[in-house]
Image (cartoon, rainbow over all chains, first blue to last red):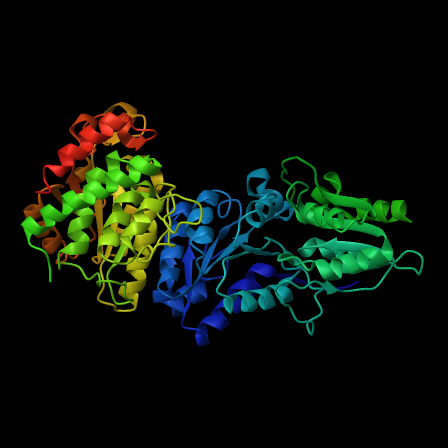
Amino acid sequence: MKSVNTSIRQSFGATLFKLAKTNKNIYVVDADLKSSLYLSEFAKVFPKRFIEVGVAENNAASVAAGLAKTGKTVFLTSFSCFSPAINWAVIRQSICYNNSNVKIIGSHSGLMSGSLGATHQMLEDIALMQVLPNMEVFSPADAIETAKIVSAVSRSPKPSYIRLVRPDTPAFFPPKLSFTIGKSQILTKGNITLLFHGPIGHLAFNLSNTKENSLEIINCSSIKPLDSKTILKSIKKTGKLIVLEDHQKIGGLGQAVSSLLLENKLAPRFIHLAVDNQFGRSSKDYSKLYDHYGIGIKALKLAVKKLN
Amino acid sequence: MALSTSDLKKLSWQLRADLLDMVYQNDGHLGGPLSSLDILNTIYFSDIFKFSKKSPKPTDDNFILSAGHLATALYVVLAYKLYFDKKKLATFSHFKSILEGHVSTTVPGVSYSSGSLGQGLSFAAGLALGNLLDKKNKFTLCLTSDGEHQEGQTWEAAMFASKYKLKNLINIVDHNKYQIDGSLEDIMPLDDLAQKYISFGWTVKEVDGHDYKKLLKIFQISKLSNYPTCIIAHTTFAKGVSFAHFDYKYHDLKNLDPTLYQLAKNEISKHLN
């Protein structure tokens, strides 16, 4: 599949700016990463609604919750290796337990952070966030879906986490497809179910589909709430499952789906492609990391072969 | 009608008596709740701040209890504010009671659930900023313990409040000098707390946290500040129960000896007549 690369981060910044023009309740609490998250325009045009807390993610999370208490929709912006990583216990109490209208935006997630190395390749964010009561978790596939998810959460009063990535990534989310919280989208029909979240999903479109060897590609951008109905229906049909994610195996989408399967007495042939209990490392080209950690195109091809 | 200094004083002993019963019957924290009680009593029962009777109103000032383990003190105060039935105090920390073991928004009048220390001042600062931006003429009061100043987040909040000139934010530190495992001096000294807040750009006042006349005056002055205000209230740990004064083991109670309970009860009762 040929596609152009676009920036998920830029899409986030532009979408929020657009939403803020009509929704005067939208505020940003930022921890010194506004340029990286394309929020400079927001800060310039809406200075009173852009709160800069500096490199203090714990304070940022509670300030965001306090601000939300006055009736505002607050976007808390940073990299996921800082927020929600440093401030997890603050998110747990100030945001989740107090059910605050705060949307946590964590950029630079996954091995995709490439050259920045292990400290910035956040591979545990979904595990940290999906375990929390009241928290919703989303991982957009590309820039187009990012815009749809940001719009959707801005209309919800619930706390949520949105996982963003650093590099420009292929645009493959069908622009006319809508995003609904708690719904997955079946992007192609086939005889092996492939579940993914985030931009890594574009790899699945690089495989040649034949009648005997076809993927039913399902975008699970809504990780919590998870669309168990769509997922179970597909797996019941195919009996074969690949979960592909740029995240730790433990605590990611694959594990959430695993328990869903067991609870529903399903035991498909299952291959989970995720980072297995390791830290990342630097590489300017993230596809080298994907190959090294067994979540790249080679591993995917092999998984498909094994299941056939 | 606002209560006079002597009325407040009288009420404080009634509150202490109820607090002691609640904690004796159900276990819970004692030293901090008793040291902070006069501060809470002043906030809610003088007319310096707006806290409506019988049920809280959206136009009321905001109060944030950062040190969630002081819940028992806030609960008795809110019960006497008639926000809920006083009889419910006996159900403290029971299954399905509104009175959670650490302060919780399940209780009418509580606007922030806490228990993990160091977060409340940040939350209060966010709330104060929201009110300031909305041009709401409201104060946000935050009660912190001295021990929780060992948490770095408290100082992140102190920096933040100063940057955003939160003149509508008042942080009261219940400086009783003890924490769960000993004195602050032994565990981790705060050194010159006032100087620290001053260096962060706050207005700082120090006061005897049991002297109603002085508390009233300090609160009145605090409303006029152009900067966030920190009131360091020097208090006596477990105030009102002499045998527990200065003994960190009474940070929280478990199975208090009935004779000790009676001793404490008698001491408090003396002030009630």
